[in-house]
Image (cartoon, rainbow, N blue to C red; front, top):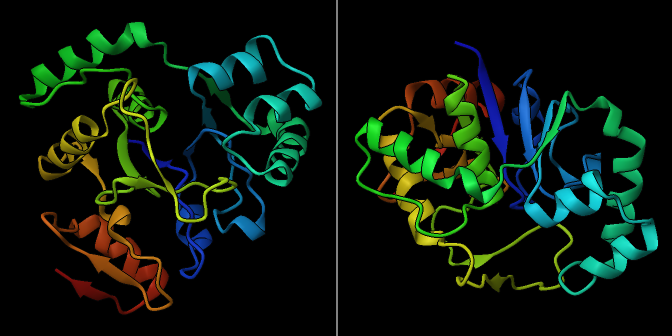
Length: 232
């Protein structure tokens, strides 16, 4: 079974992540993400998953640089948007695929969850990372996940305007549904979320609150980091 790493947009500042991310030949990056050394997120480009509004403004009916930066300026720092825009325009040809999962697919994802025996459902529009997981499960890929928040209700992202993070508006998305689904998929062997347990600390540390690392995940982490600290 081919494996793929789904990469969220949670930033790591202290723990080096690039070698772990580049351990995978195939990955799927999510959202407005710049892939350069200062962002500590590897170097390989395979697939890019975009939300509805980013897909429209970057790919389907692209805005010019100035309008793109103006549109996203409320939630992102202008410097980051400028850096992302320049990176994307210079490197978009390197992606095998740039895609968007429309909300109309939500019934399909819920049918898949039902067929797997999962008791949880998506009740609002799934976020980009969750859609990327579903897209790759449908393709029967072995899905690993990194840079997703498992515990924090406060959201952090590269280039965000909020240094202390921000609480996501739940009128469109349901974080609780998605976390329950991710935990269930991990516990039942459909997704490996071991890397999401990594704390942003200089010493590689796994926070195992209501979730345990898999043997495959531990093997890869030990290869990259050596000894690991485990916290309950």
